[in-house]
Structure formats: C-alpha cells, structure tokens
Picture 1 (cartoon, each protein chain N blue to C red):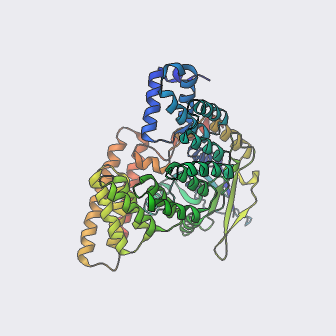
Picture 2 (cartoon, chains in turn brown, yellow; picture 1 turned 180 degrees about the horizontal axis):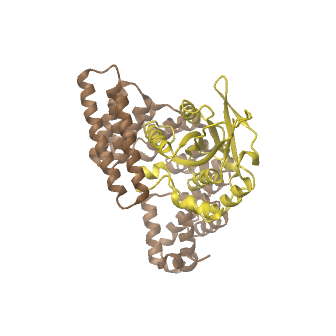
Picture 3 (cartoon, rainbow over the protein chains, first blue to last red; picture 1 turned 120 degrees about the horizontal axis):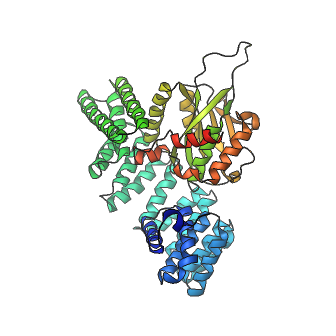
Length: 297
Length: 205
C-alpha cells in the first residue's frame, strides 16, 4: 500500500502539522491519525524533536481505537522509557487495559494513581468511562455527579453528563447540564442549539416556547447553523398548530415559521447551485415545508 | 410479511456503523411501493432496496429526527418508495437489543407502514469479511412487543453478492465517504442519498 506521503504528496512537516491540528480540534479520526502518525514516527521520528512524545501519546490512543495493539504497545514503551514515573503515562497504560477489556486491572491502575494523587482528574474520569463501557449507566451518572461537585468547572464532564442523561431519556437533568455549559460559554451556538433540542424533546407548550427561543439564540450566534434553523421552524410550527395558544401567539409563530422556511429554502438553493442531484433536494425541501404549512394552519 | 434486504441496503448500513465505530448510529430502510399481491394469495416479501443513514452519536433527541422523517418521506413519495423499517447499531459492542429510541421510531414508521421491521446490527460480529449476516431483524407482534426472527441468507435478495460487495467496500474504506443526515445538516451539499456509494455497489455487482 502506498504511503501517506506518496498518496497525498505531503512532506513530514505537513504531516506533523496535520497531527497538531487534529489534536487541537480533538477530532476522533483515529484511522487517519494512525496512518499519518505511524508513518511519521517510523520514517521521520528523529526530525520531530520533543514533539515526538505528544505524538506518541496521540497515536497510541488512536491505535487503541483501531485495535492496533502492536502500535499502541510500541508507543507506550517509548513513553514509559522517557517518563518512567509519570501519571500521565500510567493513565495511558490503563487505557490500553480498557481497550483489551481488562477492566478490573485498569481500575486498579487508576486507583494507584489516585492513591498517589487524589486530585488526578484524568484517572477519575477513566474510572467513570469504565462504568460506561460496562453498561453501568446509573453508576456512571452517580460517579460523574460526585466528580462535578468537586470539579465544577470541568466542561468536558458536564457535556459527558448531559449525554448520559439524554441516553437515559432524563431530559430535565440533561437540560440542567447544558445550562451550566451555556453559562460558562455564552457565545457557543452548539450548546444553545443542543439545549433547544433537549427542551423540544421534553415536550409541552412551555418547553416548546423555550426551545424556539434557544434555537433563535443559536441562530443569532451563528446564522449558518442549519439545525437551529430547522429547529426554529419545527418549534414555531408546533406552537402555531397548538389549540392552547392565543391568536396573537399563533400569528407570531406563523411569522417565525414562515421566515425560517424561507431561510431554509434559500440555504438549499445556495447549496444546490451547480449540482443536478441537489436540485432534487431543493424541490423535496420545498414540498416538505409546504405540506407542513398546510397542517399548521 | 417479513422484509428482505438488498445488497445496497445491507452494505450502506454496515458502512455507516463502520464509519463511526465509537458512536451509536441509526437510519431508515426504504422499500419500493408494491401495488398488488401475488395472485395465489401469497404475500410478496417486502424488498428493502435502500437505506438512508440518519444520525451518529446522540440518537435520543426529537427535532432533527422529525425533520429527517418528514424530508425522507417526501423524497420517498417522489421516488415511489415507502419508509419500511429502521436500523440501529448501539454504542457498546455487546449491546444489540433495540432500545426505547428504536421502538419509538419504529412505532412512528408503523403508523404508515404496518409491516415495519427493526434491524439491529450486531457490532461484536462486524469484521472486514462479514461471512455471516450480522443483523437481527425484529418484527412487531401484538401487545406492542418486538420479536426477533431467525436471520439466514433467505432474508437477503442475494446473500453471496451482499457479503462480497460489503466486504470489498469495508476493505476499501468506502465508509469514509458515506454521508448521513447529520453530515447533511453540517453541510447541505452533502447528499444523504449517497449516489457515489450506490454507483460503487452497482459497479461491483
């Protein structure tokens, strides 16, 4: 099989920079990371300088994702040689055991780290991941709640908890987690939009109105967020169709829904320009919006 | 009458699961609208000719699912298809039973199509070669229960072809170019009908 550098005509510096970009974006594109990282380490390891250690860590985790225990083991050994007493490397050992489904041993690994350093958040979070992997959702939720009482500012943890609650259909508690995230990140349109989706799913007129407001807020923060646009259309349509609302509320929501529909149409037309296949999409969306308008009025 | 899967439907389901190994994925199965039953009273098996990959990650939220169902329903009407089933691959490897999300979506589909089936992918048996069918098919029985049925090569239009082509596409990493509805919402130019993958499947037939 051709090497990455041959296939894409890139040099080792570009490969290194690509790996850095993926680290910063926290993408989980593990197969690509393994392809690029393995070649970089094997062919150009000596040129990387101190960057090589963080690349070993990144490639090791990606290798675990791809069941490449051989590669993961190699990276781990190099890191162990260089940083023999490091908790960070010990955590990677634990992750390898998790990947091999040796959960008891992995848990002991993390307990050893926590004995040495009770504030080690990484080890605590790995223990919670083990519970999740074993399907012990109630336990994972309980532990994560306890963790967050101590480490109230951990965004990643709040987001993980909101997802756990959504999967358990506990939308009220998921909304609470997203509220924490929105408070800490008021300009993040994704949290607004997810909050709106949770409220919509919870159902009921009050939650629908809240969801519409937050879809609108997400759009204000990023007017290209299609989920927010569709969400605004759906929530406003449902409110307008509800028999419990006053004539004024109905009128207002019909206005919002109509505006959203025209924006959706424009977005599709813009996307469809130039491609034959997408013309079908434009037409489909128009028809869908028309048929929903009929049920609404 | 139980559903049958074509190569294209089976293949794209597995490609979807392979593209997001760390997430739950789901999607819809579509069948051609049949007009008559066979003359001797034997019902014609419903052939699921295609599937539309929907979401990956969090499956339990309503708004985008509603949008997808409505949009795909409209598309189906234009192409003489009908939404006939739902597939899902859970997040955890060993978890292959239909959950509340699967049952709810299937119930919604069943409002328009009485023979709706749920297809669950068995993640633990997903390999490059896929020598056996790795799906479980659930049909609706009374008392709102979903019962799984024995899956054998008869559940496919052509199992040998399905196995060969799926294996070839998995090895060729074609799942990297599979588009689901989530990808479409990220960028409207992404086409959830996956014409390129459909072409590849046809090409290999």
